[in-house]
Amino acid sequence: MNRTRRLRKTEGIRRLVRENKLTVDDLIYPLFIEEGTDIEKEIVSMPGIFRFSLDRISKELDEVVDLNIPAVLLFGIPTQKDCEGTETWNDNGIMQQAVRFIKKNYPNLYVITDVCFCEYTDHGHCGIINNNDVDNDATLVNLAKQVISHAKAGVDMVAPSGMMDGTVETIREALDNSGYPNLPIMGYSVKYASAFYGPFRDAADSAPTFGDRRTYQMDPSNRLEGHREASFDDEAGVDILMVKPALSYLDIIRDLKEDFDRPIACYNVSGEYAMVKAAAEKGWIDGERVMMESLLSMKRAGADIIITYFAKEVAKLLKK
Image 1 (cartoon, rainbow, N blue to C red):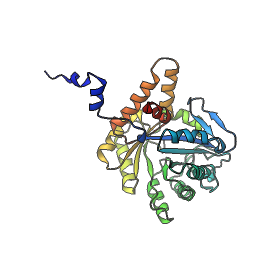
Image 2 (cartoon, rainbow, N blue to C red):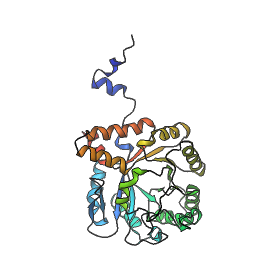
Image 3 (tube, rainbow, N blue to C red):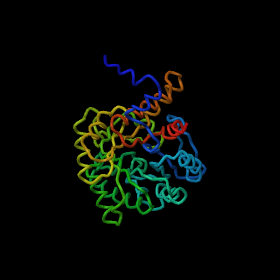
Image 4 (cartoon, rainbow, N blue to C red):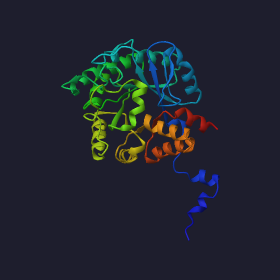
């Protein structure tokens, strides 16, 4: 008789035959940096996650570095918004200040910037509005301005999240032509119009004032379309392909892992984080075990990189 339980008998043998392992090297930690001073504000729908001003961010960054988390993904929250999100290419904007601050004070921490407009526009959409919809090609012009400003500030990688057609091609060309051919791009290549983003809109003040984002983010029903989107980014020279959200889209992560010879990232988004936190707070689940099981499922599906608000908690557990 085949007895597969022989290899489950003790923790020692389980460790030896374990097929997938979660390590701190897999993690990227998102950070919300708000323009202003003396800001350290917990996000109500995301317990344990805060918005910081630059004068209060060092405590958080010290912990990230101490835990050996290799990278952070920055989201900026400006004081000034307008219809185009012009603060995104202000060389002294909050994102640019944050990049310079971190690279000066934490030079070994890898800094990635979210490249989008929703936190910076007064309407909350991811680009220029024309006839009550985002004007794709006009938005691409501004995306090029934004990434060049981030590059000048010293960012290590840019991560465009707006799902405009032609994004990676536009950004790659802009970077190459401006003297930044070695700056990598992590594309939000397969990003769905998901209900799991709800708490993020509290975190970044980015809820649309009208309509929704279904004309540019993907329909959750579609799988083959995700492959097409990833193909376009792959052909345009993206360095890392990302799937967002993660937990409800493990099949998409697996598709990309099997079909593309590039690192695959996934974003364990705010709603996925908040659900675990809320259920754990109620005592309905073991929060730590569910957290680790969920993230391990992303690794098992094929993710090489996981962007997660759990990064610090995971790193602490792995150090034990």
